[in-house]
Amino acid sequence: MPDLFSATLSATPLIVSPLPCNDFLTEKIGKDLPVPIPRPALPVALTAFGAILVAAAVGAADPADTPRTMEALGERLFSDVNISANRTQSCASCHDPNFAFSDPRGMASPGDDGVSLGDRNAPTASYAALTPAFHQNADGAWIGGQFLDGRAATLADQAGGPPLNPIEMGMPDKASVVARLAEDPVYLEAFPALFGAGILNDPEAGYAAMTEAIAAFEATELFAPFDSKYDRFLRGEVELTRDEELGRLLFFSQQFTNCNQCHQLSRSQIDPRETFTDYAYHNIGTPENVALREMNAVPLGTIDDGLLANPAVDDPAQRGKFRTPTLRNVAVTGPYMHNGVFQDLRTVVLFYNIYNTRSEARLINPETGTPFGPAPVPETISMEELTHGPALEDERIDALVAFLKTLTDARYEYLLEE
Ligand code: HEC
Ligand code: HEC
Image 1 (cartoon, rainbow, N blue to C red):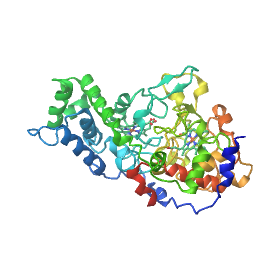
Image 2: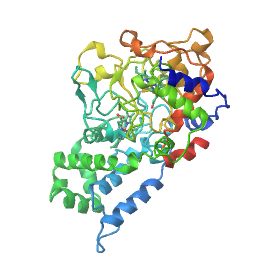
Image 3: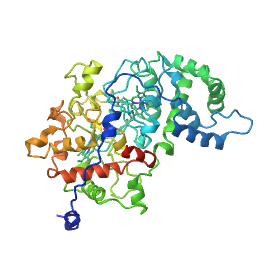
């Protein structure tokens, strides 16, 4: 038993501070889905960022809004509703730059038709550029890839999906998307300048150029600033509160929790580029989201195959596994899990605790008042990892939540106070 660690833990007074109420999360989870919320064409954060890029790159003779770099072009495309069938939806509609590139509107995102509702929660696109391409490691385990089942190998592959997805942006084919691009004088200038003359006359090449530009934008520092309180703590700029520090110790402990078995990438516990995911696939037994399925008309009991839904995978042992998500910005990107079944971060931690608790009362989901639902694919659950460690008392649960909140990028910290 690592004495130093347990000494630190027991020496830390377990003060239970009342958990700051997470009402902002509950409030921003639209009860009125699927009504689309109109959004500004260019969110503030993006406009400011674009201004910097454009100012840096544009010569005096150019119109101020013509992007001259892949990143700046990608930024414009990311917020462009014209690449959706009814011109109502852009990437930013479901990956809102003001909410860490996730969708604050609810468990699932309404599509461009205003009606269609998917079966998965829009994950944050922040830090997504750091996800490795989909591959198998030396042990044969699947790692990385974009989408929760890794079915797009890279960010550029991913960006090609939504415009043609009938329940997302709903365009019929690549040619019609590229034709939309060619309607815009800014693109008519920017695309040939960056990709060569005639690029928008070629649907395949033009579409690929669009996805490359979007991926370049998603790889900018705006998406991965590493400036959360946790990062500032690692750099010695701020101190953590007692609760946050206890949460940090618990999170990285080999003994008191299991979190870092899946949510730690680096061997070092103080790696400044930690993204809090092993990028591997696990089944943690996330229950069905009954409320979502009542709204989106997916029949109850339908199983999301997760990794097995990836066309590259045909091994039934992968059924029901999802790529471990990053925990960066997690406090401001609820609801949680692939299906958005939990609204509150504390409920997520209580959910993990069902694998270790012996208390009946602890099997109750506080959001529904009934027991956490059964695992849809019980046979592939990562039971060994999940049952590692003791049951968690309230103060430890609160501490873990406090720690998770420190992973919020500086520009979203104000959301924690709402
Ligand atoms: C209608 C809402 C919607 C729109 C529009 C949309 N997305 Fe998504 N996005 C989602 C959902 C839902 C997922 C998860 C889907 C899945 O795993 O099957 C996702 C997944 C992603 C991911 C993968 C993140 C990860 O960790 O695996 C990225 C990156 C992303 N979207 C970027 C984009 C870009 C770029 C666009 C515009 C070209 C876009 N999205 C348009 C809803 C949307
Ligand atoms: C066996 C691997 C594993 C372990 C152990 C584990 N997680 Fe996870 N975690 C996952 C996977 C996989 C998901 C996504 C599941 C899904 O979407 O259904 C997830 C989801 C989450 C989410 C929701 C993220 C989001 O954006 O929706 C949070 C928060 C979280 N885990 C925190 C923790 C904490 C805290 C611990 C320790 C108490 C922990 N996890 C232990 C693999 C794990």
